[in-house]
Length: 621
Image 1 (tube, one colour):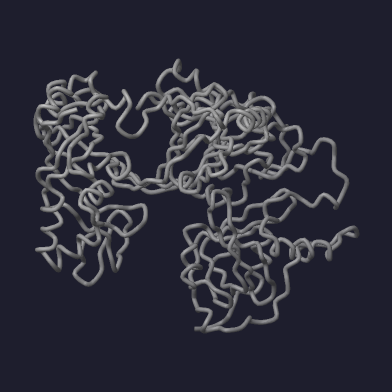
Image 2 (cartoon, rainbow, N blue to C red):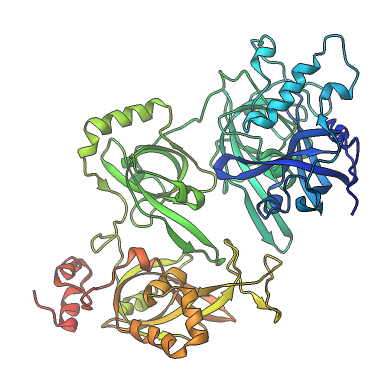
């Protein structure tokens, strides 16, 4: 294959123009850690005449670098790219699609004698231009991982007291207006706002196609608004936008806000489009930070369920990360954090996903949460969801006051929990016998009901208890054996050389009053059987007797079950399904194989179960 590159391609791309199927050589690659741990890769590329360090791979191409298909000296054809212009004139080239024509091992050296591209060489040089200074700036943009996200260097000229509004993509200047004045009937406007929260990139897949999105919340002196970017705007803006930085934003699409997905106090929300311009603002001292309206923890008892509130508290304690399986068979991480404020009240707050995995509460930090959702499950609890803002040890007066109180006296306060506590105690556990679940018609309402019971496993159905699932981290769909050593996932539209086992275990449990079938998913099933899914899959294929013994050994063991029950319609028949939740962490196995100690039975008097259970289990005080 020819090593011929496309001379002049770097100059064309750097000017913001389009060139079809340019062939370039990769000189170097650099990993950049973005916000929320998102990894991006920056490339130094050459056309044999010039080099340019402003190439950034779209996130879907990261695997090419990690698998070393893209490496120094390899030759690529650039099929699609987007050029994003920053305020100081520099351009970032987002590579959306490329093809590796020749691997690095087949080239082994730099083609030609390329020199760094200098923007001044691409246009007529004015008498006051200074090419060497621009060359230095271009070089520094490659050597610094953070230079792409900052504004123009402050020593290149005297700063103005009030910066001029930026040029929009059409070349005209728009007046800077406050966020509070925005509405769908305006066409020319520019706002100057601070990014207070930026979500992780989320993906979706449905009958209409696939896509990705991210959202952010911005604030100025007049108010706040939610901004969402889809697909190409994700690749164009996500990597260059930084939380707590101030930007000029113009030409977004405004529409009525959907309050189901946002708690921002604005009647409108903004969507980024192809005409949107976002450029950094250097003079940002007068733009406010996050605006909180804190509610004391003790007052949450008086708030309506599903209210969205701002809270601040000390991380009194926190639990280990656990995994749950959603209705769409997707695994997600969760962590419970117990917050206490100066009222002495403690509330359990749930973190999700990457935020849960990375949280470190070892130093008992102050946590400020904007937009937590209030639940009445287990008393009162909070959930930090997709559009919430979580700040650890924020630089605000309320945080300093709370920290001073905790260090001086609060650390000795035990705290009174507003949430259901794990273990045997607690009046919010909703203890039921299995017969009461049926006679009280739990699960027949619009929402699922939750209850706790003590029961013994009497039978485990081993048939169809597991299936071969997609090995991708966020996909648990069943794969199809292609009979050629590969397994296909229809959802991911990919073939894999391996798979993972997912469990859906049906168990029949019984107490003194009745019996009931329950369904246990991955973690609960593995804890019940004492084996992980992959090991069980191997036993089923290689040693059926050992596989059967695992199920036999799990019978007649007693647990405290936490259950979810909901009446469902399937093939025009009503099925009552009970889904066991969190056996591995929230439920207790009786070590002595006795169902329950008498001391625990005494705590259940208010449910009227002591006399019956004592007679059934022949327990004496």
